[in-house]
Length: 113
Length: 113
Image 1 (tube, rainbow over the protein chains, first blue to last red):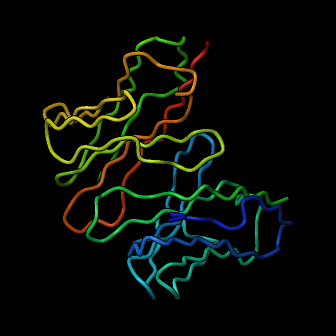
Image 2 (tube, rainbow over the protein chains, first blue to last red; image 1 turned 90 degrees about the vertical axis):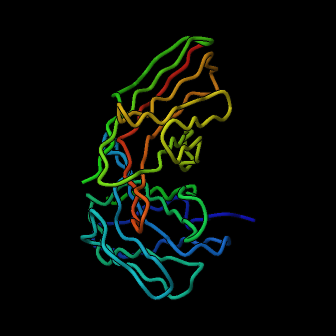
């Protein structure tokens, strides 16, 4: 099993450009999450999903949209990137009736200039 | 609401020194407790967990005991190695339907040869 994978690993955007980050998991997990990690701020939850076709806002959802059309994929979109969105983005997943822990992807480092 | 407080870092130690990273929590219900480790350039991975009071989680020489009376889950290792240099996150999740775990801000550990 590949676990949780993220695409791309690195990206540089100009202000105003758009992009989509892809998270994929092959563990048949129901729950998926998007976090951003900034120095001194720890992990902050952007959006999450409790199942295919459902999404919900986390702590810092502004400027981001998400979609969960397939159970194994969770997409994070930036419609108009801003320098404040420069960060490392992590995806995570968890099984509904498994252990309480999450499984994390390797991260995407995004720089907005 | 739920919260996790970790000691601020960085924690700098020499190889073979004893490690303690403090973690205390507040929770609205009965939590499961976790320590995650993030090695440089990687995502978080579960280090250990405990799901009920007085349980001890252990892995790779690290240990933490779930202390309900002091609402603590301190991470310890008897003899650290350079390869333990990483960021350590304490986290909790309250059982009974909560989808979202709560993370501390992380503690950076630097081990010198």
